Length: 171
Image (cartoon, rainbow, N blue to C red):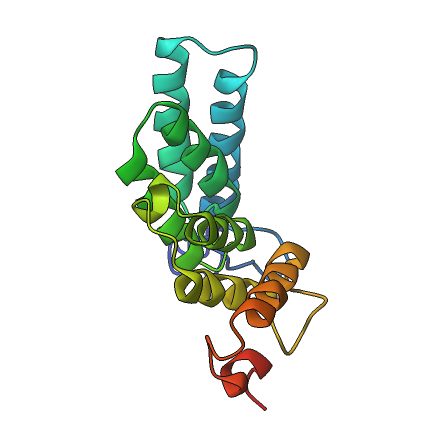
């Protein structure tokens, strides 16, 4: 129906992730992602058994595919719990690509310590890169405090590990 608020050519109504309509409301896709996240979290509550974990993983996967950035960490935690290390790494990398601070922090910690997510290799340069991305050098109020602290700690241990221009951020 022409002019209907459900018409797919209206910005913010078509399900474009992150786009808000003219009244500032979230898109349908974004809202659906949050609903799916909540359902997944409910399945995880109360010592979920194998069947509940599978359902939770399905809902969290769908939530991530809808662009819900808050679903990356619960999904990665569930995958880790189930021993799905490769899937955990992939989920964290996708979250880091989307700029999710908790994913950047987790990857930085993994490379700093050298755990399974980092293929059991301690790599301070890689850790510093993730911490740097999570630090927001030009806007420290937006940055993750743990990323900022750990980046400073690495720079004290290995002063030349990343170029200072990069650590200072763009002008």
